[in-house]
Image (cartoon, rainbow, N blue to C red):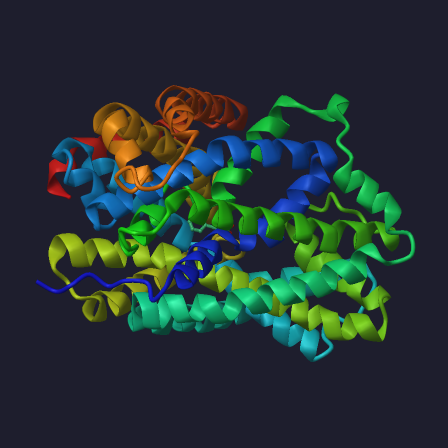
Length: 468
Ligand code: PHE
């Protein structure tokens, strides 16, 4: 039997896992959600969800993967065949996310070029809005997605250390550096205080129920949880690795990038009197205008900002891609070299459909949702949270306290004073809270037909559990 691929070092692993976590979720999604949801209050909810629940669940995923040294599905299957569908759910969620994530990755790449070649040099949101709409509904976006996917294919083909590890080691420090520079420029702008206040001071009277749902959902998405990615990444870890401190690094970096992105975007937008509640277009429409206002410094920072966004997207999409590749290798004996390209082609097809659903195929809907929205609904609203609930039930009730704590502490070698508390959290509290959020989120979304369909898919996976 082949020996399992491994990360070259602890540092590589932390970079790769942080690379997975730090993505469009942090730089594109988090600032606009904070902008739409009252700033500081949203930040607090996000931080609370990250440190209480996110941290614990990430630790569970890493423990489960390292324990059996096998990817998503196998980590469950080794314990019990009837649980393997939870891993399969993770893979499915991953494929759904991969159905639109590279498209947005491609937008980021395109914007590097657009910013560099001066196509975004305007302070007029209407003009920039038109540039954005024309771009995402045109065929050009497909080409950039293709380029983004080509990068993914090359990296994942390269393998765990030489491909994913090396890429993350190079990209992550660059990303941090660029983000620091932009955040510092943003918070030192004249008139930035207002934005800083909005982003950093929580006004708890503004907290709504929806905000709690969105903040927790964001924490999950941002940490790449609920889809067994961290199980797969954990499976390439050495038995000697200390999981608690490693997890703290990953969660800390991910949160730092979210907060820094907020600092890079919100105060600058305030300083130039721009809207921060623009939603998904904040990064692509508002930010170029913000940079334009900064003058010559802005014209350098703008392309760099999109480089940063593209790097963040890349290190995340390769992590999702690795999930099915590991599965095919562990369970079907199909070598990485044989699976990467066909899978890549499949992902490209999904992204073409997602892209067209923003233009010529916008009329093709399922229960009122376009192709893009269906992927987003099923993954983000249903599968990630359900995956996290089932994962914690599996760890808490099926694997049990003794074996989980043994894995956490490397057989008692590492002293973890809060191990008992952690176990209570994953056995009782996490499933209850995440389960509650799942149900309330679906009620809030108000698309019963789509919710039922999503659960029917989960039921089908469970029914065929033994086949994975
Ligand atoms: N965490 C990534 C982000 O913040 C997205 C992601 C989700 C990656 C799930 C892998 C798995 O953009």
